[in-house]
Length: 169
Image (cartoon, rainbow, N blue to C red; front, side):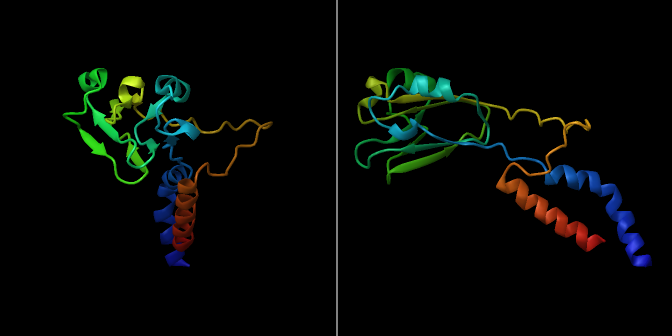
């Protein structure tokens, strides 16, 4: 009995933090560049970007292309404007797809070095900071708050926190 009371005394101050962590959501999204058309000539990537923004730090861009027909070259703004792949930040041409994480708050520039850049096969994306967390659900009698996690990551955290709490009690 005494050991249980000691464990509860330790667990009680941590409970609000554990609950907050359990219901935190991972806001990273995966975007297929060009949607079903992929990374290919004849796609308006400026319009595609406008329809999908905002992009946030932690989001992923996935480029699908035909092997040997296209590549994904990350460049700076000047090279983007000139379709110049001679001094790339990174260049990926293996396989048929490339996943890129937007890991900093900044503007990213991508082009194809197979000559299609001049036909519009280029993409400029601004990664914004993560938005602030949503406020906690209100406790209105007419609207019951949802206790269902919004992502697989949140569900995994919920299970881990629940198991930890059960061990403490």
